[in-house]
Length: 166
Image (cartoon, rainbow, N blue to C red; front, side, top):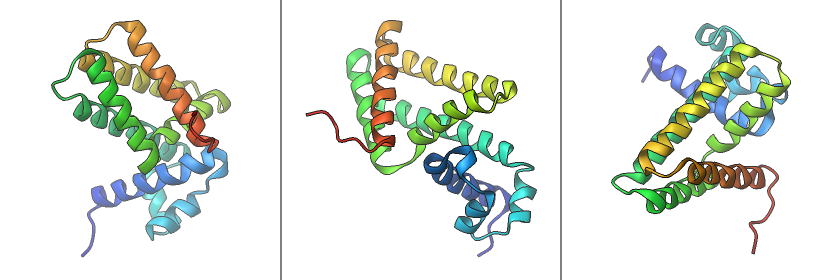
């Protein structure tokens, strides 16, 4: 069965997230992404005109998917219960999917690439995720900030494969 262009684009984005999450922007080749999906590099560039465009789309998608997971986890919960449910969902993401690592790589790239438009897109994605956590939980800004501080620690720990604290 042949995939539509939209389905192929989604497949490429999933592969790009997995590759960029571990290799970063500079350490990941578009050839590796194309190979993972089973398409040619020229076809990849028909879907995404540049490596930077692909990286940006992968970064945005990682935020969107994380937001969907957090929203589902919080469901009808509020306050600390909602934040705890979202934290458990984040821990599952860290164990199962590269989304948090992709978001970490995107933050590093925003600083390293000196690309103001990309940084603006990334900042907007972060703000939307922060707002979603705040809205879903109804928590105070300090609690939401603490949630993201713990997320940054957990993601960094996963990135360097450090064992969790005892």
